[in-house]
Image (cartoon, rainbow, N blue to C red):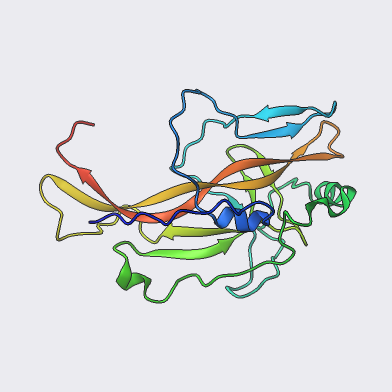
Length: 226
């Protein structure tokens, strides 16, 4: 299958809202010799920056907690199931209000819902998947509280396999190779809240959070050594 290279993206993302920046595809990953590269920073109490490093995580059972809605068209999230226990809602709102209009161009003021499925996807793609606009609030593997509160929303487009591991190309499968649907992941910029020691104040910072971004048909060599 011929690989179609995406058109080059002009460097015009400066000043875009965070949600618009997240819609841009990430550049090709560059080889790095760093064993534990920095993925963000946090402002410490002295006013300096402390680095944030990725934690060891497994994507096998990876799942962010998301805002929940009554139906596919509702733009008002329900409280039940949307936030983890001890989510610092009031502290986050105070931190956002404290900085005035500083975050005006970072967050979306309203929620945007997208259809769960695009028309014709089943005919155009080997692997069936569902596309939806989601708003994460918590990463259980890192303990990060992701900011998604009234008037300050961070959305991301999910593309999730209907049946991960399902056969996607029976015609090309043979005794030496197999084709299966595989869930792909990417990362997004997200503002998170760090709870202070007194549990009264939070510090906001920008980090990279993984999310399900694609469902692809992958060839597996059945005779290759594992």
